[in-house]
Length: 192
Image (tube, rainbow, N blue to C red; front, side, top):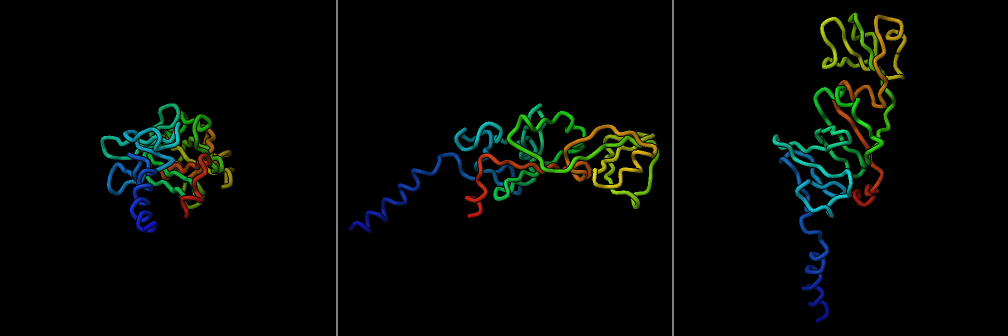
């Protein structure tokens, strides 16, 4: 008899502990799955870890993360096990000057990259860099150069250093930014 009661009431008990309105969500069918610590803006606040983990859907059904200083980035992927979020936006180089991660829950572990304004083009085969066409204009090109690559050409050639950013050079070339979070620490639970 007690086994029968357990079989009847256990499913009801476990359903009662499931957070209502906190089911896995997404903005579009092939978009990233959103669940704790993230939540979509239409879900109750208790579904996510606030502040800073609220996502919303734009009119194109992209999943959007808003970072401090009103920097809106498209969420391409959320890796809950490694606690990384992969973000995209056209011409990310134009958004990064406004971005201050110290005011967010996210960190970036990349090596710094220098941006150079160059008045003369040069061969893609000889140097390790990414061209940043959205910042260039007729008469000059902008290049993202990792500090570990050969900077000598850029420092001694027809180039002027614009700025150094704490992001990888591929961030500028691919318009992708990978950020990490450490709180809340959910990676171990997620992997199970």
